[in-house]
Picture 1: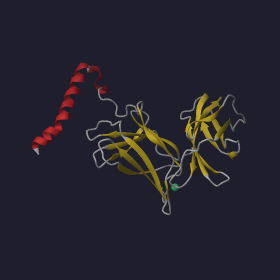
Picture 2 (picture 1 turned 180 degrees about the horizontal axis):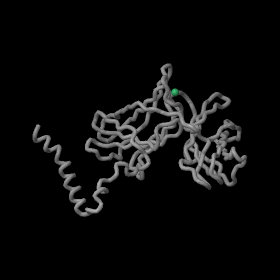
Picture 3 (picture 1 turned 90 degrees about the horizontal axis):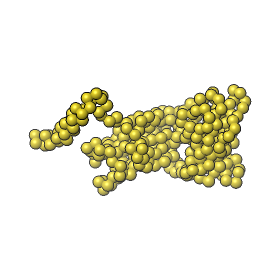
Picture 4 (picture 1 turned 60 degrees about the vertical axis):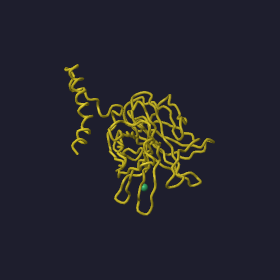
Length: 278
Ligand SMILES: [Cu+2]
């Protein structure tokens, strides 16, 4: 045991030595020597740290506690030695067990994002956790070193959002849709990006992006009965991702009426909105 434990400590000794060396070069900034753990994912918080049987760690970050709506998620994969792995493939599989039935929720599968230094994706949760409805999140990890994908799982809690950040509607054929507000995240006076994700409920286990639709917006200030000029109608910039601009000309509560239409102009949802306060 003894030689082994010395070996396993060698990297730490080397690391401490190099830290000492670094700090001796710059005594004034001792507090800043250690890079921040969240470098790249500032504004995100670590929600889960999942361990794979093969020794990998998957860290799950999000800016906010999980809520009903569009949740940005960032994943970091670490090897057994703690190094970040960028050549992995990771997939989310959120699942809600409602006792009598199970269903998933719409996701954008993670892609490596060099700015975040993490795999970035999203989950649009369509229901909150309840006493009878329990959410879990599986993460499927594939790395070149592993012959088989590894599946990690954790329970998660999804809170209702107030004001609502998701609405649903049904078309004349009975197909259900979900619309989630994606932006603005930090609304300001003037023009803001305004984007929504639209998903279709094909089945309990398949909620794909709803493509080829039209989205029309009209911001109104309910307290004052006026709107604003120069809004840019959203157009589809990626599957199910409709982005335009909204103009907030005053601070206060804005109700952004958000209609969804077919490409032929038939209204599918004409009485829904997102409330945004600035
Ligand atoms: Cu559910």
